[in-house]
Amino acid sequence: MKVREVTPQIDAATLLAGTQFMDAYRLEVSGASLDARRAAERMMARAPRWVDALLTMRNIIVTPFGLKTGGEGRTPRDIIGIFPVVSETPDRLVAGFNDKHLDFRVVVDVATTGRQQSITATTLVLTHNWLGRIYLKIILPFHRLVVRAMLRQVDA
Image (cartoon, rainbow, N blue to C red; front, side, top):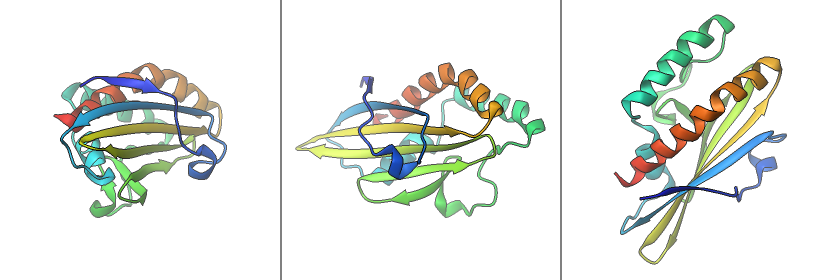
């Protein structure tokens, strides 16, 4: 159950025009029959405790700046974890939100070959100002750890 970084293989301009940062991680699973929603739910609906602690700390730090701290203004049926669902097909789920400092998308793709499935999580970010650029630089080391940990939950 190894998560590995891969070259993103999506059309960023279609999903988030002007994307300035993009990365992707993939997990291969055997014997699963997941669609993109189910994979995203396994990945994002619950987080390891240390990830929850990081998110709590993040929310405390960004609140004075007026940044979003959760799924404000959304109904529960169109949110997975803390991320609003933007679009969905059986093979791809796009979640994320726009905020004043940056726009963010996470794309969960599922590809099936025989009894093997590849689950790929691609992150796209478009910053809007100095706050977004600083925020992105600060969270990137954590982002890489969090995405890998969350993706491992798909096969848990």
